[in-house]
Length: 110
Image (cartoon, rainbow, N blue to C red; front, side, top):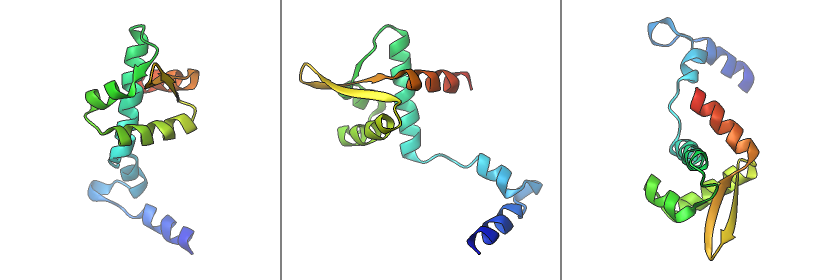
């Protein structure tokens, strides 16, 4: 029944004759998603300049977010094997994995 309802809703037209499927493709991203993409972009830019690892404190400053938020989102990225977070000289640092670098290249090209 839920699937039938979802199917019916996706066939409804939205403003200017677009279907809801088309409109959903352009739905705004939530803040966490935008921050994770920003983190990948930042890590990729640093990697391209020869800095393989970036301190989480630096990421906090550049993105203007709290450390707890960065740690939570880094955990999510780490679970997807896009970044690796480790301790280096009493500080947390993050680096792109091969998968993360590949995803970042695709996102940069898009």
